[in-house]
Length: 170
Ligand SMILES: *[C@@H]1O[C@H](CO)[C@@H](O)[C@H](O)[C@H]1NC(C)=O
Ligand SMILES: *[C@@H]1O[C@H](CO)[C@@H](O)[C@H](O)[C@H]1NC(C)=O
Ligand SMILES: *[C@@H]1O[C@H](CO)[C@@H](O)[C@H](O)[C@H]1NC(C)=O
Image (tube, rainbow, N blue to C red; front, side, top):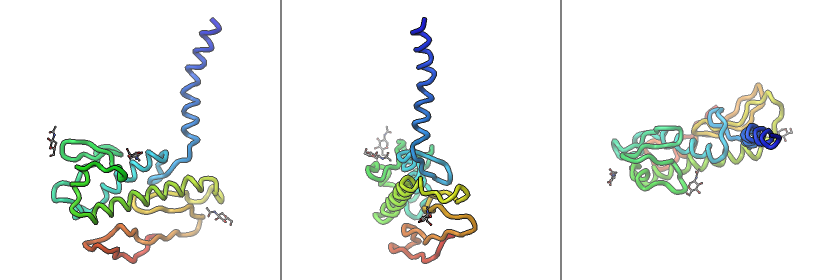
C-alpha cells in the first residue's frame, strides 16, 4: 500500500519537476515571446525567411511558413536550419546573395539569443524594457525614459548587393 502511494506521489510530482527545470532555463525573446535557445533559433530563422522580400526568390517559389518553425517547399515541409539548409529550400532563392542575407539574419538572431542568455542576471531594475529580437533586430535591455537606437540591419538591401541603408531604427 505504502509503495503504491509513493509511486503515485512520484508520478504526480515528476512532470512538475520537469516543468520547473524547463522554466528555469534562460529564455530568448522573439517579439516578447520566450523560447529556449534551440526553439528560438528555429522560430527566428524561419521568420527571417518569411520576412524576406519576394525579389529574393525565384518567382513563385518562396516557401510558405506553415507553423512557427516549418516551411512548406513544394511537396515537402522543412525546418529553416541555416547550418544545414535543405537543398530544396536553398533552390527557392534567386541568388547566392539572397541566401547570404537569410543566413546573416539567422546568425544575428542566434547572437542576440546568446547575448540575452549571457546577460539574464544583469538587470538594472525590473522596470527596464527587456531584451528582445523583433524579427530583424536585437534590442538590449533599455532603462525607462530612454530610447534605444539601432542601425538598419546589414542584411536589408534593396536591389543592391551592398548594404545601402544608413537609417537608424529607434
Ligand atoms: C540544425 O541542424 C544541425 C545538424 O543536424 C543540428 O545540429 C542543429 O541543432 C540544428 N539547429 C537547430 C536550431 O535546430
Ligand atoms: C517532390 O518534388 C520534387 C521536386 O519538384 C520531385 O523531384 C519529387 O519527385 C517530388 N516527390 C513527391 C513524393 O512527389
Ligand atoms: C547596469 O548598471 C551598471 C552600472 O551602472 C552597468 O555597468 C551595466 O552595464 C548596466 N546593465 C545593463 C544591462 O545595461
